[in-house]
Length: 345
Image (cartoon, rainbow, N blue to C red; front, side, top):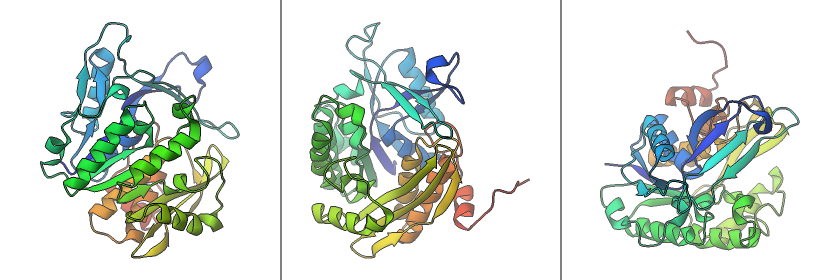
């Protein structure tokens, strides 16, 4: 039986380490994707049984992605395999080149993901009643998947509605990526899509992405976060929990890291504060936060504790390379309890 299912793209990430994409001669290869990273973290850190619904072109690259997903312990039985035409004319697998950044040089992502197999999914391609009828407890998707093409938003809508029909808890992360919406309506259309889908969600992660005029339009200060989350709650009256990371970026290698949430039961809640957090690789930290939050909510903890799980796993995700969380639950709980970085042996 599967606990959590995610819908999203899984790409190959090419990591030049401390170097630059433009001058690299070798890359470390990881798997990653906004929605997938969440279920990977839930599986590896917290031991939940998870699966990912995605599509891959059936060639050696797609099978490499599958192998990496299997190494992460995530069930691959729901992957849809698209026939390969030999050169990727009809369908291909997504690639993501990412620099970690250093000091005054921020992280940089260069994605190569147009016309991928998963972007061509259409409403009706997946039997969601079959997926959700086997005891699944939670379904997660987000704005990255929804923004891949003109058809994926309908797939996400169909999946979220089916999950609600089967009594699952549904979460959504707006996770705005300007590159996905360039030439396709920009941030205004992204906002329209997010509001359409987030209305199906019980839990919205990255909820500050729905505040303001449109994604990226307004900088929200820490003092403004309570009112911003309250405004999002007004837009989404059926949402049970709205959560967000809070990050200041003095440099690529040092971030001030925290979180906040709102629920109808508790009102506004602040997560642990981690100022001056040293960062090796920030990519995937928001997905780590989502995984920790979902773990806490599924385990029946209060919202404050769930926020602590999310904040801690997000922080630990920034201490290792690649998109995916590599921390254990013991490390997460030790960090919540105030453990230091002293050597353990």
